[in-house]
Length: 353
Image 1 (tube, rainbow, N blue to C red):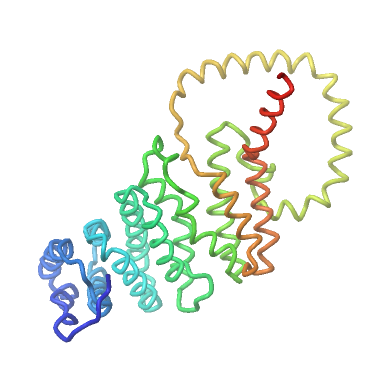
Image 2: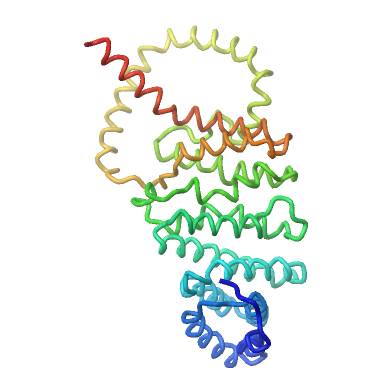
């Protein structure tokens, strides 16, 4: 919870020490910070901004890869030490600081800050996990990201941060969760910032990256885990909506190819039967070895429903709307509605009676 700042509150006891030239001074300040922050519940915005400014330059002053990584790990782990009352403000001011300082980072220092962003996202997801994936907490976190580094329209957000977060979002989420328990995670809720970008961004590169790195990636991961073709519609070099644009042009050629394939299949039936028997034996042997799924269990139905909501939202950017519906269709094809199946079963029971 952020409270109104007083002259006494605004004086951070760590700012100067965190940015000190002497490494020992910085290390002591970071160690003391961990103990102090775990007990403090009320933060002023100014206090947090001064704190993160000091931490930003603490990372700036670290000069060896191992030291940089250890420091990023330590600073990011503060997310799970901050009391629940203040953690969202702590996360929000981190991103506010990163966005404000980003364009001043020289090329040689960028990698260590990218690593810091990655570790911070990892611990943010761990924080959600420690709160038992509470939907209210997830919504608060999503709002922080939507109003901060994953805002679709703000010119204050550096593209480098926005692109990096899109790229690592799924990866860091999956690392925070045991695959066996992934089905219990409300992934459609956690992806709210990505739905926001799909609907509101006017940057074609951002839209394409979200579609490919997040929503198509989920389908491909799931398809691979199910032993299906991960290329969705056959061409790994095309996105889902690129393929949709080419469907009309390819329709006539496909009809001609089908006729030729049918003629060839009749000649090869005997050979294929033998091959299928051999493959069937191999699959039976493999099934015994794969007792547990290693695929992250995303809420495909929930994601499908939210894609439809984005596509039908009147505030969705018009140039994005059709492409969002194409993504929705891909999810719809991948997971047929359960309601239709249940209705079919009920009708069958009625007929039997």
